[in-house]
Image (cartoon, rainbow, N blue to C red):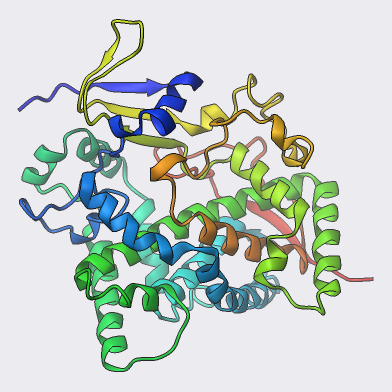
Length: 423
């Protein structure tokens, strides 16, 4: 078995264009470990749309894409909006003990409740109980030991060997929990049909196409992706708004006025119409991309035009999104948090393929709309009800956990929080 690992680090913009647009067929796979019918192993949730390859991935994507349309997200809006109100109440209650709040965990509790409700049809009560089972398993997915991080990269580099050695892509206890939880929901909804606008129902509509375990793998991916990516977006947005009170005040004014003009109601269309909110969210995604690296694998030899340089089939390709977003050639003063980069006048100056928080091309993130929806709801609820400020425990400048697969702050996001008092 060949244990020589070849990795191509993508740094040149013109090559990135070839990757995602003109030569997609050469790097359409991600190279992650997954269970296979020809070599099954004890990690069934690993075979999802993120890890599947070739025609199997394409067929699965075609079937799942309709689940993530704007129309489907609108159907789930009320569920997330209601949980957003619980977020406000739970945080306000906790502030009676201390107004120094660790917002990373709070954002995780919010997104965990959202996805437990929409993807598993359950009330996980993470906002009320920070040690709920869903929270424990969510943290177990991403709070990896150094050895587990090594195993993750080893499984990506040598998937065939990893299967034979029994290396799992998902921590076993977390995988078992999400697998069994979805199957229970699947069985209950099948025996006792109810009308609920959520991912569970949309997945159940595909039960004649996919097995229950295949559907469980996709529900698990919704949880794994939405739990950490959206909470990461939210926590760093709050961090920057705390450091930039003028931006926080401007955003709060836009949100409050917009809701008041809409008869006091927050709706799907309204939340995506807030211009400054979108500018703030986009700048947060630029400066703090939740997933700092994007992976691909060459599916066949690729020779660069007019050169002798060849990327051999099977080569792992890594795009460091974090570095791309902070390249001064594309984003002047990249360390500065500046939402004006994404104003209507300035956004047209951003070069294509330099802003990639959700990847791009045929293998972009299907859950982008859901991630933005729940993040914008969460930020709206918080900013219209609270004022966020730095405190003695706030890490300035920001430091990151080097081994984390998602962008994770050392010691979390510690902020001083006060109730916003309307005039």
